[in-house]
Amino acid sequence: MSTNCLFCKIVSGEIPAKIVHRDNGIIAIEDVNPQAPVHLLVLPERHVANIAEHTFKGSADEITSLMETAAALGAQNAGGFRLVVNTGTDGGQTVDHLHVHVLAGRQMNWPPG
Amino acid sequence: MSTNCLFCKIVSGEIPAKIVHRDNGIIAIEDVNPQAPVHLLVLPERHVANIAEHTFKGSADEITSLMETAAALGAQNAGGFRLVVNTGTDGGQTVDHLHVHVLAGRQMNWPPG
Image (cartoon, rainbow over the protein chains, first blue to last red):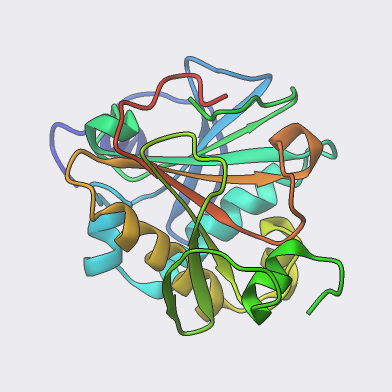
């Protein structure tokens, strides 16, 4: 756990969130500032700053669980869905704890931001 | 291989593309209609329609290789990067062969499309 990390505090229960899924070290919550009718965040419970750091220091099982959970939650929407992973300033990352955005329920546009 | 799939034809060499990386069953090419100064597509060589189908029928090793390759290519950009995976109509998927967009080289905006 990283003591000043918003998502670590959600994982520990210190900060409330609407949890929609929790299993196998992965948690999914509703985004508090949704950009589509369905907007979830899927993240590992343990603190990992971003997907680039994960790639070099994480486990294959964890990245698989993360992506499979995100895809399975997205697939609950028959019309389709978009997954987005932001890393660093140019990517638009606002919380430095790896998370996958799952967006669905409307036509997503192009470019993706 | 799916006979009418654009990306399968790129994998086989029938249709040319600028290949920037090829290893371990994963290939990365430049997007022909880039939405950022860096815009790559990372995909499994074998035909998989989308990440939801992959989750239920694919291998953990493959999804790990796919995401780690995308993250490693993104991490070549010091300013950060965005990964995007579109599935189905609402997601904006235009080629039905699983691929991860890697976008970098400019500030990505919000919402992500």
